[in-house]
Length: 250
Image 1 (cartoon, rainbow, N blue to C red):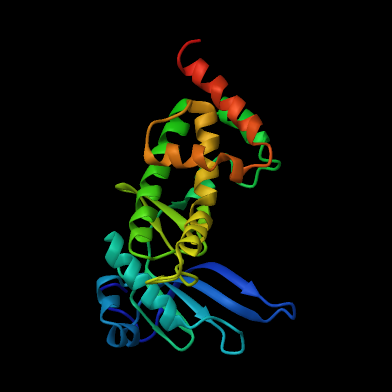
Image 2: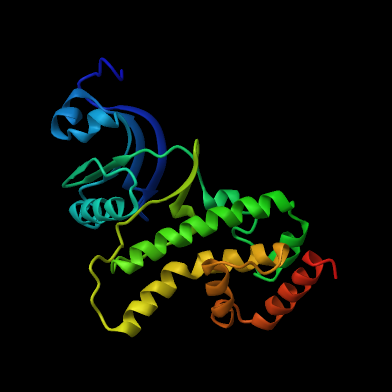
């Protein structure tokens, strides 16, 4: 079907489906092989025939796919990632990035209360902590690049980071809530930046609770934000001190 496509898209896999309180479909996301109609309408689909399409059902209230497309296009331009494929009134198409979300790779996802993550960090294999740390640093660098251009993601959670395995590289996805060319006052810019970074900085603190304090822009940002990230920030600071002593052999 890649070389001899059928007339319409061929659905390969349903990725997600959201329904309303009455059971009606609101959003249906699929991995598809682009058919001839799609390739004629969106030239980029010929380059990425296997791609991701998000269908918004006409009766649902949803954002403008044109905005999501433009947000994704600008982000791809800044980050050097694959550009989106196209959109129409009720759908958005983008390149499929094979991999797993960072939320599924992290051992700290959905752990409550946050203090439980301290024990998890100590019990997790060092190689796992190091690998996730390297990914987190790359994501932090990507977000800083976006923020420097006045671009804020708006929904920056770990499930919106896809880790491709060949080569190993994180990609940011889902830019429908992003703000572009933000020119508000500095306080507003800092608030947008803090929201984008909050979950990543919490992850950085958990990782350092097992690794010990690191020396990098991500490490410094996470430690500076510690009082804002956790109610029991003193507990996390004490665990970081203990991790430092273990790492130093003390």
